[in-house]
Every structure is written in C-alpha cells, then in structure tokens.
Image (cartoon, rainbow over all chains, first blue to last red; front, side, top):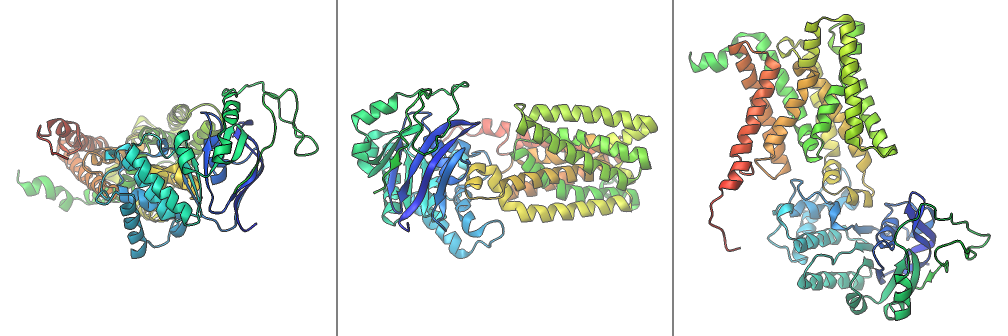
Length: 267
Length: 290
C-alpha cells in the first residue's frame, strides 16, 4: 500500500444529508496526476474539500497516507483581498504546516518564500497589495503558496479559471513539475482539451463517479453523455440511500441514478 | 492664554487629569489594535452591539454592590461573553444571520440594563454607566486597565498568526488544520475584555468609539497591518489627550469630547489621507506607462 497516497472507501460526501459525491471507492497512486471533470454541481469541489479534510464524510472514509502533507487551493472567492496584506504575506501563509502558531520564521523560510515568488514569475511583486493584483497574478501568488507548502498531495480547485492562456501555460508547467517530483496532484478543471493534453488520469463525476482511469477512456463520448444526464438540483424528497447487506447492493429502483459504485483505477 | 496653559498645565497641575490621561493611554494601547481587527473582519457594528450587551451585567454588579468597579466589571464580562456566545450560537444553529441575532440580543440587553439600574440608581448613576467618568479613575480602575492591556497583548501576540490567517484566508487555515475557530473565540474574548475595560472611562455606550474610530481612520493612511495598528494607537492617544483638554477648558463632558476628537481624526483622515475619499479623487491626471 506504500504506493497509494489517497484511498476512498465507499465515500459519500454532501451537505445536510444530501449526497454531492455518492459512493466513491478507489485510490490515487503516489505521484499520479489526475483531473476531476464534471458539470457544475457534480461534486468536484466537494470531493476536494473531502480529501482536504474540510468536509466530513456523510458515510465511508477518505484515507491519506500517513505523514503526507496536503496543500489545498480553493476557488479564489474565499480570500479577503481587502485585508491589508501583501503578496509576501499571502505566500508566507504556506509556512503554516511547518511553523504553526509559534515556530520561528527562519532566514531559510524567507528565502523559500522569495524563491517561490520568483518561480511563479512574480519577482518584484513581493510588496504589492493583494487588491492591486490581476486575476492571473493572484493565481500565481497562490501557486507560490502551494510551492512553499511543499506538500505530498496537492489539490487544486479550478486553478485555471479566469486566467489568460500564458498564465495557464505557466501554471501547468508548475503542475507538471510537481508531478515529476513525485507529488500526487489532483486538479478540478473544465477545459476538456486541456485535460486531454495535460492529465494522464481523469475522474469524471456526476455526483456519482461515471468513469475513472486513463483520460482518453474516461472522457469517451459515451461517458460524457452519461455524465450530462444528471439533475443538478437537490430534491428535498429524494429517497434515503439505504445500503444493503453488501457494499454493491444499492440498485434500488427509487433512486434517481444508478449505483455502480465505481472503483477507480489509479495507474 | 499661553501654549503651556492650554496644553500642559491641566495635566501638570491636576492628579485626576494625569490619571485620566494614563488610563486612556493604557486603553488606547489595548483596544485600538482590537478595533483594527474588528474593522478588518467587518465586525465594526458587531462591536457596537457588544458594547451594549455589556450593560446588564454591569447593571447587576451595580445593583448588588453600588458603583464599585470590580463587581461591575465581572458582571460586564459575564454578560458580554453570554451575548457573544448566544448570538454566535443562534447564527450557527438557525437560519438567522449573526447581525440579526446580535441586534436582537443587544436590544434586549440595553433595555434590561437600563431597567436594572433604574431599580436602584439615580439618573446620574445611569449617565455614569452609559457614558463613563474618565475624570474619576481610581487606583483600582487603573490597575484593571493595566491588567486588560497585559492580557490583550499576550493573547494578541500568541494568536497573531492565526488572527491574520483567519481574516485573510479562513478556508486555507482550515485546510492546514489551523486553529481558526479558537482564533475567532479568542478574538471575541478580546473585544469583550476591552469593552469592559473601557466602560469605567468612557461608559458602555462610548467605549466602542475609542476602539472603532481610530481603526477606521488608520485604514485611510496605510495598507500595512502593523503600521495601521500603530497609527490607530497614535490616533487613539492623541484623541484622548485632545478630548481631555477640550473637556477641561470648555467644561464639556469628557467621554463624548474624547470620542468626538476621534471622530474629527476620522473625518480628517477621510479627507486628507492618501487612501481617503478626497485624495483618491484629486490624484494628478498624469499616469505612468506601467
């Protein structure tokens, strides 16, 4: 099991007992590079939150390899850009896992922050106020924070939204470099061409897993069509999911979707 | 009137003025930084509401022991903590937002506090509790302000990183297992502590003025957090001294005079500071190429 970074065991995630990710089982291999694809409301962000430990499962488990450090980059709307902070402060947050509340920030740490800012092409922007950055510059700064976090598992939620082509190319280079360094990377993305070009593995979600495996197979016509047939709205009167005696006996007729408890294959 | 007689003599000559100035300096040092975080967390009005919430506790202390600082302080701390926790719980466990629950709690608190004081006290007592009596700070009150400053400084230094991270990117803090919830609770405790610390000097209604106005003014001068805190403290202290002098020379009540001076500092900053309304409009029409 040493080559596995994340394991999903019949994982169901959701909000107020409505499932947003339904019965996911499988594993992410250490060093794998996976895209999560699906329509709005298909559970992509929810799954990342579940892996990051921000959202507790409704049932089942997420297991992260012992000792693995996790970096999670949420969609950008969560940051208070009007807080009086500069690029260097934002990137320095990445030191938290090493230094915590009290640990001294060493000269070495400061050098790492500086190097990360250089690596994302923001040299000279260290003292810029956050509310003066463009969308692409902010995303670069957040990638610099991920670099500083020096994590074994990197979770990026729609990192390529609202950034221009040059920035996407630069950020993608960083993602590839992390993967090449043996880090496990999971990226939520919408652009299927980009996913096909850059990600060896894809998990296609429509609240339940539709397909999970090599990108070309996962994103087949049939799978994409299957993924597009799901109702985005929660139904207040949706029937309760009652697990049968075995894990694979969920095929109740009153469900609004099939339960094929997908087991993901991580190459 | 000489400059000495105008600015120095009142403090040099009268012990009560020295005590007032010392007490307000201690209060500025502790409550202005708290005010900066209150403003940055968009909780300025919540701070105002919590200042009202302190009142019934203070009133119960007054009812039982008269105008004694220690029981009134303990009562205020208790009531402030109760309302902060209550409003937080209502917003967490029901669909009601924190602003509505906070408003509900503070209105109840204000009415209850005034009623309790009127059971025993005179209108003068009520005025003193609501608007303070900075010119009658005794040793116990000064010791309390010093203790308040020490506690605020320790908590703020210990939780500094968490407070900043919780304001800047709360979701990130949660994702790395940081103490975001603890930081929020500690912060609310700091607000209550400083409101209660300030009520003897400025009263339960006005003490929030020395917390919020200098912070709001400082926001117009800088985009650096530590500089902002330093400026807020400086404005708080200067407003305190100026307010005491105005009150001394014109026989106006001291609490309102101090808060009005802080208000003037706010309006001047709004107009004249680099990030204020006027200066951002009056920037030269020239622009740089990049």
